[in-house]
Length: 258
Ligand code: MN
Image 1 (spheres, rainbow, N blue to C red):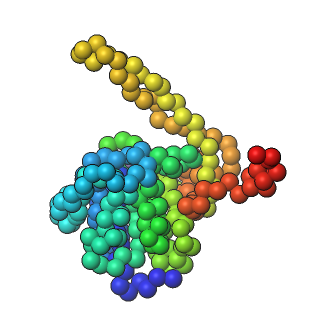
Image 2 (image 1 turned 90 degrees about the vertical axis):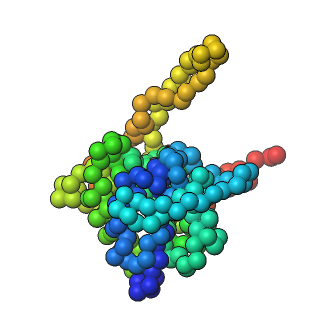
């Protein structure tokens, strides 16, 4: 359990420091204590758990659209968390929250996601960490209902705490609060990707490639998964841990004669 009298909450994202979902999340977190905003300067979606080791990182002070002071860096989302927790921020951070992402982070999206990576980085520093994503990729998305869900989830995280190296991946349907079916604790589902390799020619007639295609979909029939829950109007809460071991394979592989 966290002491809720003097909490300090670090808020980041992968959509960039001026993304509306970040402002909505930072605003919602204020009731729990001091909020520190530290996000990437540019959109870092699908940049995964990148750690910048081969170039210097610069930190800029900036403001969100409502005037909230914020830090930004030209690094990745996980760099934002590392910079803050390694000492750029003097405060003792209690909680790391990431989002609210523009678009869902479901199924196999997790290892691509910069939003999840920011939360993972928080768990490496043994902070309770939660990632929030809204199932709406449009520029006009309304983050107010998902910000209210974030507030309710964080209230419970503060009350119960989270195990070490474990984060919550929260995905919120694009619905008004009174139309949500409820909240479900889920497992990771199976994404279906529709990526296409697009080949074009540059002005010098040299080919270049773009990974394009439609946004991923997923298996909506597997009850109890994150994909199933969001499709059926539930807020999906999946506990995720850093241990990626396929535990059920250990006995099987131990019988192999290498
Ligand atoms: Mn994103």
